[in-house]
Image 1 (cartoon, rainbow, N blue to C red):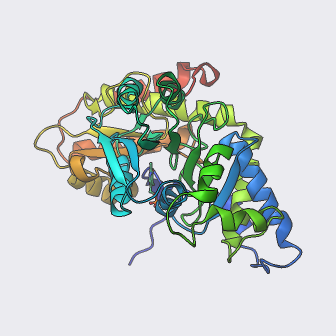
Image 2 (image 1 turned 45 degrees about the vertical axis):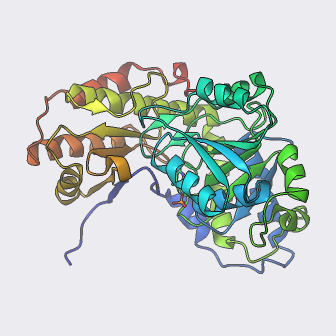
Length: 398
Ligand SMILES: *Cc1c(COP(=O)(O)O)cnc(C)c1O
């Protein structure tokens, strides 16, 4: 195969491009994970992730697993077969989490959604109020729905649970939201947050996280289902001194510690504002082309990715193939219900204006090459946003 010069643009909404600093941090010798030098690596990672989740009281667990593993960990530690959980259909990832819960034998109730916005706190509150026997043990919501580009209002979901005076745990999938979109574990009263390495944290895929409140830890001490690998109770002891009950992803932890340092050097608020600004510029481009953004809820559009509806009769996957061949840019595909109907532009992680403009240029050229009806002007509209929107004035959706 002929060598391709220049960098490939990995503009799928995770994995995101890994910055050189992180690659270099990972490219060091693996050390003895039970030896004296490891404690500082483990402690820095566990303490550092608390600052990313924004929790002081919560516990952080790190698994050598993809995000899906951390989903399972959240469920098996807190609910058992036959327990009821309330989930909200924001899109493909909420659907997968729901299916997982069912496979585990949990009664996984699903509030239907149209895949065009975040979870509706009013619908959650109404269902919880009707659950007078408190059969629902947990409310599970996806923070940033990566299949649609919508952000759920987590603080309002908490408020809905409180308004219904319901004791259910609040479990949040922020696999693609964390470190890109504002997330506040303690302030929002989240009980379990699930996250992963390969999205906002800018790492390769391979490790994932649970942040856990004292309330959820107490449930796990006597409850949950049969489990071994995922058991929080087995992690607590070794974690207290920076160690793990089994071999951790040592080199990924080197990378994680670098990522945490980078996020704080930039400042989390600046990171969120940068993502929000790139999201706004991308939506301006899409509308400038005369195309439609999948997220239809104003204020819930994601700074992580933008899902774009393809005009009737045109294949989103055919278009993505054109863009890959023409510009060496990978765009995200439509998942399940919206397969071939949407494409997704990832603008997350280690990303700047020039990279966004290159990506949007690739999209515009691809629309022309693939014969997709559109107007010119998308790029200009994006530049206009980049030139006029003050990043510090933009706040991520809450
Ligand atoms: C990526 C993602 C997942 C799945 O994570 P894996 O690492 O692929 O297992 C789940 N939920 C959301 C919201 C995601 O973005």
